[in-house]
Amino acid sequence: MLDQYPEIALTADRFIQSHQKQPTQVPFLDLKAATQELTAEIEQATDRVLNSGWYILGEEVERFEADFAAYCQAAHGVGVASGLDALQLALRACDIGPGDEVIVPSHTFIATWLAVSQVGATPVPVEPIEATYNIDPARIEAAITPRTRAILPVHLYGQPADLDPILAIARRHGLKVIEDAAQAHGARYKGQRIGAHGDAVAWSFYPGKNLGAFGDGGAVTTNNADLAERLRLLRNYGSREKYVNQAQGCNSRLDPLQAAFLGVKLRHLDAWNDRRRALAEAYLQGLADSPLTLPVVPEWAEPVWHLFVIRHPQRDALQRQLTEAGIGSLIHYPIPPHRQPCYADAGYDDGRYPIATRMAGEVLSLPMGPQLTREQAADVISGIRKT
Image (tube, rainbow, N blue to C red):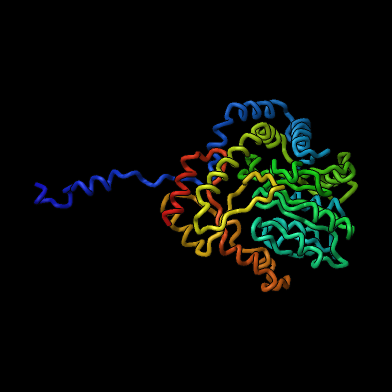
């Protein structure tokens, strides 16, 4: 019969091939698994808020603001609607607006730049240190002009920027320092948590962050009581008293349900960050002699590995091969802000930002998250080594 129907003949080689282990599906990030790990606590938090009858600001938000500020070693925390709003409101609270300039990294997520533009100020890009991806303090002073009002360092990928020289430059020139910590929940700089080194620190609680909500959310932490009060005013229509508006504010309030979810996750943040560190160490060891450029951690930094970002001159080919092997990856970020269409008319000279441009063509983020297993990380390492 097999001679009559050769298409159904199954040789030993074909049998083995058909039963070989299929490529492990390694997701870039598994948010569903993170939620399932905390199901009971999340359900309790949900019931508490829904049965409270209070759904805007209130005690639930205030409790999370206090807990998160304490975690960040800051005196005050102000919850807002998103990470972009956190940056924008922090700039407004520092009286930065039209005609002002703010120094920003040339390599960052575009929200850093958008916040500056949205208050009417001008982003002034400064190139990063190639080893850490963060803004290079040695390049900042050359970018300062009489219109400069602030420096906005980003703790990119969960690794702290080198803050001491940045703060020293700011003091010499009378500038504000507003930190973008959207990816750095729990990170430490010289032993102190990110959260109150500068005048204000802006946070995002986008679901994929180390501390992520079930929707958008954000916060600003600070040690400045007056600044915190100004932020509370601006986020709530510029009003302390209902229907009395002292400032032209906006509606940007962290809601109680998200605050409750974040409160649950905050209790697990350190443990989940430790899992990320273990995975990062596995990557660093397993890929040490590979052709990849691996991230470098300065001795004073304690990153939280929001992302594990490598570089490769044939990045796109590498990503395709990983995809074919069932391994997820993303690019953070494929287009630098100065090349984005929304800044096409801003007059940025492409030739002045070769590092950011080169990074955009080489960076690739490997799977990373507290629910990623050691076995999955081993599959990622194996998949890269086979390319």
